Image 1: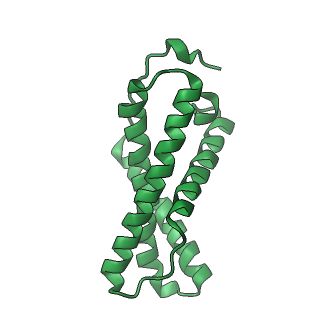
Image 2 (image 1 turned 90 degrees about the vertical axis):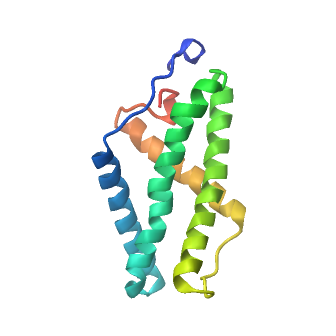
Length: 148
């Protein structure tokens, strides 16, 4: 476990090519899953575009936390944890709003049925927890060990 009380946070950086490759793949696969499960495979391009919101948008939410907010929040583990989960929750809601606006703009006034706003926040928190669990299993810094 890292000693968070005496931590100097290093900015997170990643090559743009790696970010776009990873988030693009997530969007294409996620779009295929959603289009296939709904039985509307012709909607795959739209579903892929919508999935870019949580994939690429989620990356930028995480970057904002890591590089801007985290250094400004007290380093105590409980404070860092609460701040990050709050950012994920609010960010998930914002991403869902972006998805909804995009769908409405591209489909006209016939958007599909969407869940309650707070479900989007909880879903994004759950997704991030799973992603960070995978990072931890792979031996990389993650939310779960306080290093990522």
